[in-house]
Image: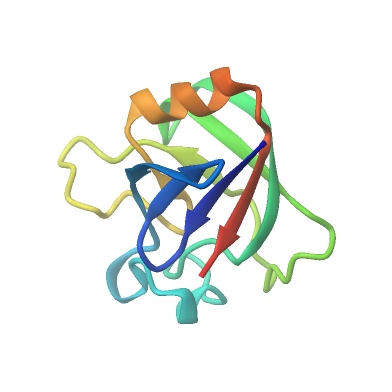
Length: 122
């Protein structure tokens, strides 16, 4: 089964069912698909990704980050290093440099589901 994440709405779905709302991108690029090509501003590019690793403690993104591997046919605009991780301590919507930001409970749910495919859509 598959996860889907919408760049525009922040909706995370599993098998078509809305699970939660997150965000990706920062400043003018916050949830703006048209800015996916801008490093450190726009959301991660559309396409298919595999969740390849659980990072229990990451030096900058904190606990329980999920590493994403883009499909070889994704148009990545030279961007890389995407994760699904939590917000900053201020919870002010500025933690993303393109990564998907979700609360811990949903990152755990994703990892424990064993469904390792996520498609990022507009």
